[in-house]
Length: 421
Image (cartoon, rainbow, N blue to C red; front, side, top):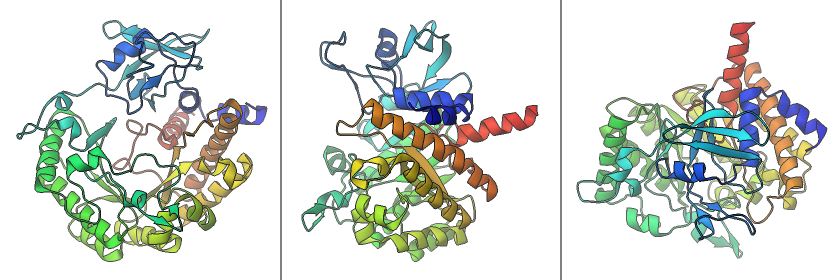
C-alpha cells in the first residue's frame, strides 16, 4: 500500500485501523477457525481453499463463523483469505485469540449460534429459514428477499444493481411464498417469522430491528408490502425494539402511513452511490423505476416526518473504483465526500458499507487503492458529520452490529479521546 494510504489508516484510531485491516486482509484458515464454526453464527460464504493450501476437509471449502468481536468491542465480519497474515488460535474451552504473523495475540469472541436457529416453528418449519438473521445485536428481517430487478431487462440490459449477487429469486423466495408482482406474502410466512422473532427476542439482547427485502418494479406496491411486514413485526415486538424500514425509496403516502401508525422509528432508503451518472450505471433498476431525483426527494420527506438522525441511506463504498467508471481512488473519494456533504446538509445520514470486489478483481494493487479510498472517506466523513452536528442514532445502528461499517467505531474512539483529554 502506498505511504499516503498507510498514513491515513494510521489516523483512524487503533480499533478502526484493526477493523479496516481485517476487512481487507481477511483471516486464513486454521483448525481453531474451523472449530469456531461449529458453535458460531454461520457465515453466508464458506472459506475456499486455494491451490496448494492445506485443506483438512478435502472438499475445497469449509464453514467459518460470520462475526468476530474484539475485547475492545469492535465487531467485524469474517472474511476467509488464504494469503492473510491474520490467524485464529485457541478453542471454545480455552478461548480464542487473533494475531497477525509475528505480533502479539489478542482475545476475541465469535457471535454464537443462538438456540432458536436450531428450533422449528409450530408447523415444524426451521426457524433458521424463516427470514430472520442477526448482525450482532441487530435482527434483520427479510421475508421477501427476491428482487424483481433481476427479472427485468431493458435493451438487453439487466436492471439489477451491478454489485448485487443476493437478490435473485431462488429457492429462498419459493420457500417464503414470495411471487413477482404480488404484494402480500402468505399468512404462513408471517406466522413463522413472528414465532421466530418471539423466540429471538426472548433469547437475544436485540437493540435494533431492520426490515429489508427485494425491490418491486412498482414502488407503491413495495411500500404496501413493507407496511404489511412492519405491522406483523409490531404485533410481536413487545420489547419496543426500535424498527427501521430498509426498503427502496417509497412514495410519500406510504411513509405517512408508516409514521402515523408508529410502525418504524427510522428509515433507510439505500442510494448505494453518489451522483446521478453513477446511479444510472450502477443501479439501473432504481434509476428506471424510481429515479435519482425522486429517491433524494423521498429521503428529504423522511427527514420531515422522522427528523434528523432518523433517516439514512446505505452506500456501497468503493464500487466507483471498478475500472469501467474510470475514477482514480482519490477522485472517487472526493466525489463520495461531496455526496456526504450534500446529504448531511439535508439531514440525511449516509452509511458506508465496504465493497468487496467480485469477479477476480481481489488483487493487491486494486485492494490497495480501495483501502486508501475507504480510509480517506471515513476520515473526511467524520468531519462532515461533526460539522453538521449529526450523530448516528443508537436505535438504528451501534458498534455491536456495524460489522462492515466503521462510523460507530470511529465515533467511540473520539468519545474516549475527549474523556481522557
